[in-house]
Length: 274
Length: 315
Ligand SMILES: Cc1ncc(C[n+]2csc(CCOP(=O)(O)OP(=O)(O)O)c2C)c(N)n1
Ligand SMILES: [Mg+2]
Image (cartoon, rainbow over the protein chains, first blue to last red):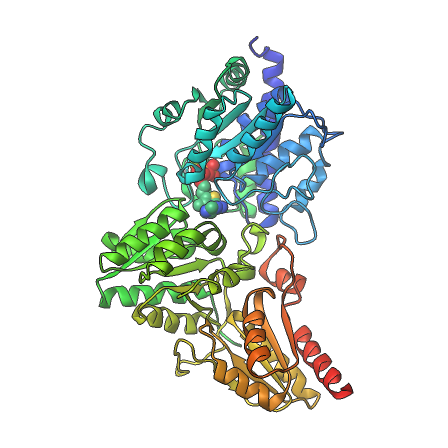
């Protein structure tokens, strides 16, 4: 079932709203990570609003699907999606990174409803997703485990240790979403430590690979459906994205990886998001 | 007004100066070259800089290999991810194998600021201090950082150097001597010894002034080298003042406070109190807000010293 045009319109509106939150939150804090949040906006929105089985009223519901933000610095998009979904009030987004708030720079499992793991030290999410998926199999439950990983993050050895575990245990209830925006902190991934044939790597590790345009709502939606259909092996969604997507001056540069917009830049950004 | 400068700036400048003099100096980073200011070394010596990517374990192992081949590698990353994740590589490939690797932990203490708990290194000194053969250096400001980088280069063996990101006051002087393992006495006193490390020297000076207002003479000892620690300087001062307060931008477990407690308990039993972060994780906040949050301030240091004096008088 493809997305209806009405649904697409709603999701498009939602992604604009989330992008507005992202620039406002980082502007408020004077720090934070807009680049990798903007590249992941469609992926996160479609996952949270149309696919993941969670209950904002009951965040600890024992049959819920789990989501792990392995690239933990992208809290601006994560918190925005959680708030819009109803896990906590949207107004709270404007306490991002405040010393007396709970919306810390990186996700904190103890204090934030909907967050199942603390993250921010890159490379740890897939192992945790595997753990939940193994338990679901043990318990005979339909629970799924989603994890979002950065392309730069994939330089961490633990990602590949975990990828072997997922495939070895045939964890078809694990879906890894790779935000392939081609940029990390210092530079283009290619200039820091290139991935060579990234898709072939995942295939060689025993994964079913779906390569999509991560900003195309239809393709994102279909990728999550395909991941649910594939049995016997895990699915990696390799999403080609643009870092800083949606705000012209933030697009395709490492400059906005970890930089907050000033007053003027915020105004310019918001103009592009009406 | 005291001049403010980020310790990472002094670090970066010293590295480039040494790089011009010595062509065996190589620098590695783990995708934080912009933030750690090692990118300036890269600009000057593109062939002697390696960005290993977001792979801290690989970074430390590669540095060990470079050392085996006669280079003097400085391996840089955020302090937490470096000391936490690559601990075993430091233990086996660096320390146990006795390789001449300089480990540089950045974003130290509260300078990780709004990044929050995952990024605030409050346990790195403790971890590094536990490794046999590791020398641990925690400079007070950008000026002392420059001297420490030079000393680390010339020192034969593994060194851990802790570097802060954000500007802090320059409180040391151009002609203060810097020798690995030698504490510096910045103030003579008879009533209590304040032993500080790293950027807490600034607040410790202020605490000593506040105590002076109350007629209490505090001795200030700056311990830039936490390992090997200056046993002689600590025991001599403790024997004289009979009370000791340690001050660090780090957990009170395993860092300066623990190191001083070990020395005193065995060699010069003396009442001691530790000022640092307690057994807890951090939060997000601007650096001054975090220093307030953890109470890493002169007022608490002075109050702690007074409490110690009161207790001693009662006894
Ligand atoms: C273990 C670890 N090393 C280093 C960092 C610092 N760091 C934060 S984000 C980042 C770059 C991440 O790049 P990528 O995974 O491509 O993320 P995205 O482009 O989606 O923002 C780095 C090096 C970290 N958070 N954790
Ligand atoms: Mg990236």
